[in-house]
Image 1 (cartoon, one colour):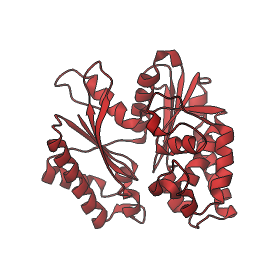
Image 2: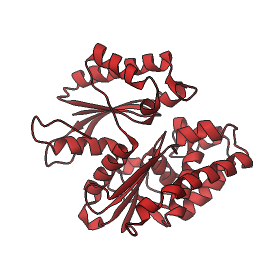
Image 3: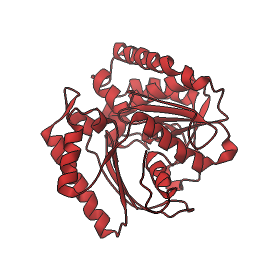
Image 4: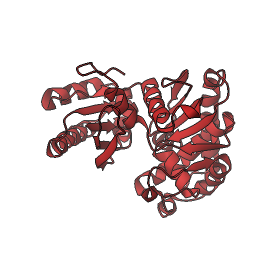
Length: 312
């Protein structure tokens, strides 16, 4: 099975060995940093260059799928395409020329599917889960005791978006950081009641590249040690790294072990969101889950009967 994930930062095609009742296993990965959100003219319209490059990468993924013997490909897009005023037009052209449907997920879809993946990874013994996911364009939060969350919300607090809109200097000055911090906390505080009314979480979990990199620089095991090593991120560590990252130029952040060069510019904004979320929800630590949205989509597909249409 192939999964094509068109995000705000990357276009990622993942080939999985997947079957009903089994654990999806990654077999091949191809990732390109397109930074689609940066191709939005005035934040609204996907440029011709961005649309053309996206078309090329979808075609490339389909060729890889054919070469790898993929039997079924699931393609989806998140906030950058979702918010583009011409997003439907761009995807319609891709469908016409490449015969590929790309599903545009809502922020709530992202939260629910990520929650499903986390539930399957940790199991029922986690009881009430609370899940945080910081992407390039949005923050998703969900809580629940079943496979579907009791409550979920999505906010435009992605690390890439906030860096582009708020942290324009390198390194950013204190006024920019304070303004961003106030903005992030106000946005989360406005929605926090919809989650906290269900009571405290028994297990607090984080997914996404931002959280994984924050955990890594705070001392968690590197990815080379495999997905089954327990990795934690504490609120104290996030606060300390917010301070340290705020004083570093991007070139210095790139040198930190565990930080990918393409994400170094966004890491401070991601840390500010992580710190705010952990503080406002009173989370002392989060456990990092190796599964997230892509795995949630695969699991949802595998739950269906043969011939039953996939619906998010």
